[in-house]
Image: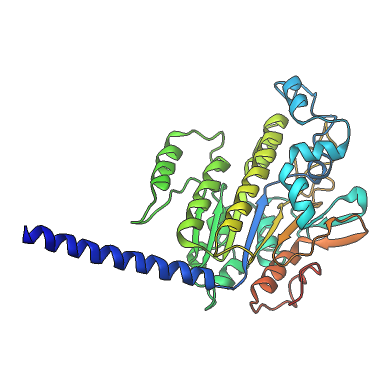
Length: 372
């Protein structure tokens, strides 16, 4: 009987200690007032769909759409405004109210790449490093990036060490981020969650990913990238997060316009869930900024070049940028003449995080970020 009582007392003490530890950890998270930033990319999503919704020349084209009737019912509306709202309900229903959307060339808002390649590795490198490097980054080969990304700069700073995480559907991201040199956490391609403290959901995701065939050999389905990211946010609370969704580009290359639209619509919902999570978590709420963009454009001739990109395809340097959150003024869709560039994103992130970076060789921060 005494042994039972002693065990109960020990258990009770340990329980109190655990609760006290959790309380202190929660209080520390709530008190952390440093800025948090999410960089999110949708691979190869055209500005045409973002600003005008489903393309009239593609939505009924049986070469690219399996069920034209079903696709039209879901995504076709008479006006471009209605079409974009049904395709991207979160972006046009909520982000357009609280943030800014740039890159509608029909409204003279222009954003361009500065690299001359117009495909993924050079595009992502430009986004994350703030400069084009056509001399060294001219293929999608898995070559460690010789340039330093903003993720690495943050990881090696005192304020953000151990608080940077990257997730991608494409298996080249460990090279783009130069995982070995940077030392930051990267879950990309078909990698699983690792560690001794895996959540039940992470264990399930690891099993499910093994058992779910991807249409592509180098890109996993975005649902895995998204949920691995969510679980890490819950557990580790990184301050700088990079998430790259890849399906839109691969479905486009495959000529599956219906799947391309479905994926874009699904990713809109992923971004919504990420934002809602940050607004319900004390660590992120009121201290978080999202920057959403793409690595390259696509051909602007619907029936000839929409599947393709690269410097041999006209206008594939045309991109877009969305920003919303704590440090962004609410201006909605920008309908005035402007010229912005992808190489401004890295400097903008350093400004948001209050990190030092040499800006003489990279783009300048976007002017739409609020001044302190």
